[in-house]
Length: 346
Ligand SMILES: [Fe+2]
Image (cartoon, rainbow, N blue to C red; front, top):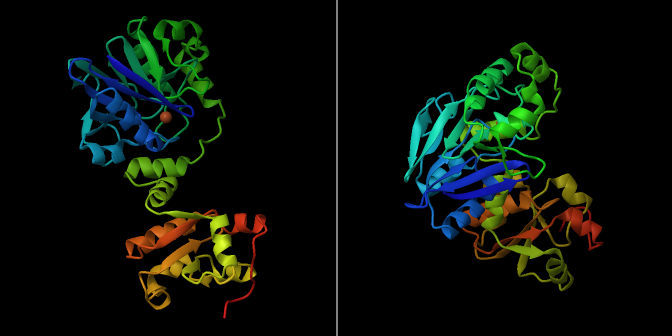
């Protein structure tokens, strides 16, 4: 077996491949690591055949949908997954052929209704059903502590105790454990009585994961996160540094149009000398009047550099091939003590 474990903060993803055929599967990919997964697959000579989410994630942005489009490989989830874009839905006991290997799905609801564990040779990918020294929480949408108890004690923990477990999360840098070790030392698994286990799970009082609303929106719709949209825009435009722009302003360089895409009140409170005002919200509708020459070099700036990156990507999409974004924004410009002008430009 070819095996790579990739951590993104506390989130764990796994790339597994067949040594003989080099067919591979990617389990629980995180969207910010797509280049890394593809680079590892290329380094190991693997062809990614399946993109698997062990469950609907509420705390990270799944990369399965984006990768599926890029690799023309199916998104695989449990039958109960609410995602409309799942290509292959597995039921309990069903298997995927991965070259000479077989991945078996075990339906283990509890953390979510669609949670599954994936058994492959000497190991089980346990998703958020069983963590090292813990279990997944049951207080997020579709969570159910009694279902988790049943999944653990009547299914997962009945497997061979020697099996290694690889969870979807670990926040302490641990790589793996075994079913035997968890049975003996995992504090939550000492609550063998269903009611006592449910009482424990219902009184954990965990804080909500950051970005839960956005993560569920993105993961359940196949849409994009805000940071993904910013990353894509940033990858499609060139940038100019604050210092390079300051030098041009000091030389009164008129070959560059500085376009301030903030709202009027922010612009009038202090802008780069010579900058024109064209708020981001009006960009497409006013661009023909304001920027009649698409060959001009245009630099977009905003308060912190995000809106201007999106505006620059829009301008380039509209044919302004000379549009660049400021690497930074007016906040950094002010903090650097660079020149400012108040009010409106003539
Ligand atoms: Fe989860």
